[in-house]
Image (cartoon, rainbow, N blue to C red):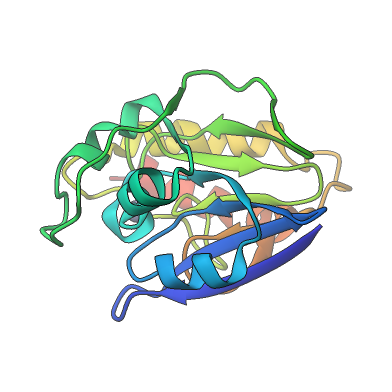
Length: 206
Ligand SMILES: [Zn+2]
């Protein structure tokens, strides 16, 4: 599987990813300014997946869906953010084609992935897990966790989600798959496990 990445949107630098396999592609987080790049670089796109509903990650969804007929996937709790202009960025509204409500594997063409639910940064925040890599959105970054002080964020949910991460990933010390975040450089499961407890303790003390 080939992967392309490009930070999108001045002031946001939100990573848009394209995964390519057998001349078909999947887009992850088609944010502001991403459509032209997607059209040029994503062969025959099968779907656009959103780690969460914030505009800097979803700005291109309506155009991809309505003009390029690419189906949009998002966890159901964040769909409402596609309908409103959450950050006042003149985002064209849309309703996702697939509202994800569980963590079951989803197969589209030759791609298999699942949405793993980690609310806190937003109500429907998810990591999108492929076999060999995980897209962590704004949940886990290179050396910190995502913000949980937005109006629709929730610190208690964030704490539970971080605990869930520690249970699900890498407790064996072996699983060290890369995590590709919504902003900045990649990290890995073991690197994240090293800093997450500090953030869990920080939330405890708030
Ligand atoms: Zn966000």
